[in-house]
Image 1: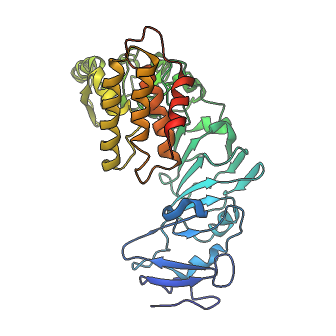
Image 2 (image 1 turned 90 degrees about the horizontal axis):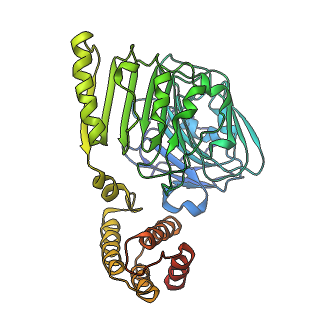
Image 3 (image 1 turned 45 degrees about the vertical axis):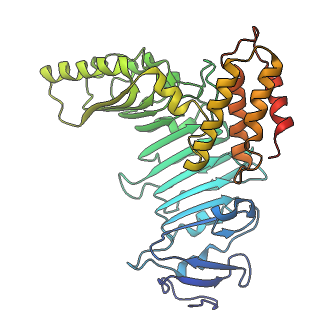
Length: 406
């Protein structure tokens, strides 16, 4: 196999697949395996297991220049896509001369941090704030190309701030409660980011709704894309300058203004939305076309009845591998049927215990899956039964904890 056990291989000199010793954190500290056709690389702590190609603990410094020796067969810098979980901000210094097409960064920070990416050549940057409780301020990359600067931020947005050149597009995916209890999530103040003109807000379809009150701060919007559960759609009427509006996987559009509220609108998409409003939107599209033809794309498709949302997104197994999801849904169905006949807390405990122990011998039940099963137990505790009084959430949780081995 090829070997790069030299101090400084020529830039872009290695483009073949194979195994290479690299001085990532010290002399020959890591073995890099490059597979044919793979343009991505993931670096993170040992706990990520196979999700990371190279294991580096969060607070260990990395010599990013070791990757300058590598190139794709076409001659562009390799890796094209970088995934990093850790706190070494020197990667932004490295990216001043070495472009990164797309980077996903999960900052793991020991203190509040200012990261200067203003001179970095980062075209698509994804920040995931779910591994740290420290504040993270980003000096944004300068716009290299007019339409090729994208920033995505997910997790606890209250920890994030940014300044500098506004990205061409901004995507925000705040951490919301998995339980839709009707209390809206309010987006925190994002400072200079309110200047963007192209915004996407993402949420889960059955999660705590995000209030669209936040849009009053975004005074320059011309393009807006919404994914998932939201409320206060009437606030959209103030965004009269919109030329593009996209609505996807939204279970309730009841107070959505008429399309006439946006006189400049020329592109409109509604995909996987509730049926009643969807039909009304189709009529409005036709009516608008008779007075001012649409010159861009319009579509209203996949209209859904209320039960579809519960069946498709109501259970916490949608991200599981198909085999495990099938097993989990079957166990959930069985438990729900048993609970429907429960006339005492003992009956309910038996149903939830049977559901819980079903997974004691299943491989692949780790932290995320355990949390999903705990959420499923909470849902089961809220389902219909014949006991005559609610099942306290703490009681269902105790039954779950007592029966599980994971």
